[in-house]
Image (cartoon, rainbow, N blue to C red; front, top):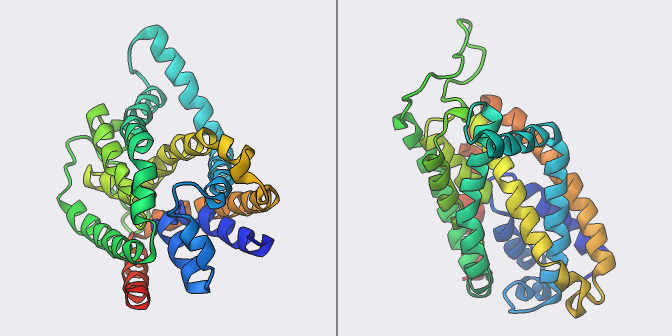
Length: 296
């Protein structure tokens, strides 16, 4: 792996982990389009240097999210310890702490058991293209079905009379813990190359009545511990024999992933204040079909 390839893949990981178009799907497909077949093939191997390299990208992406949401996470952590003392959920931060815990458990358990075998089987160009098309269809369906989403609790401030203002929807802190668990289960779909973690989490939030801005915020907060844990869990791969010859590239790629994620989260926060998932759905379907024709 060259340093140029490492930086390109790092930027790709940092951006596509948050943009709802699937980081794993794109790290399988784009190297194949570029002719970097050894990198594409290495992703579906039981053990490879590429899996060690990805550790740095995951950790760097999570660190960018932690830095961006540092004040939010400080409040959430304080809220969590408060609930241990009071045994009640009284504030939005306390509820958010437990929503994130409940939503993280399913993907954590499934990831430990299934991430490796699913990567070996499905991290191939044709499979990734098919799942990328499916991801686009999920985003389209989420936009269509959100109009029927329940709103049993007070909505956020609606649009002003002149058409400006906040998109109507449930407040994020009104989600029930069981709803967080359902969204967490949905997130396990991202174990398949081509299915976006942020996209499927956002769709889950939209179907529970959240607006796009809050659905994205919940997706990014929920992604942080999952991505960080995945990276930290596999640090021995990077420090061991699998990391021989790619540690410098992993550092360069990690820096690129950090920058990509930092820019992406700031852009997407503004994007979802006024816009929806459909442009990302269109990209997934078009790129997925083109890749399927190319590699089938």
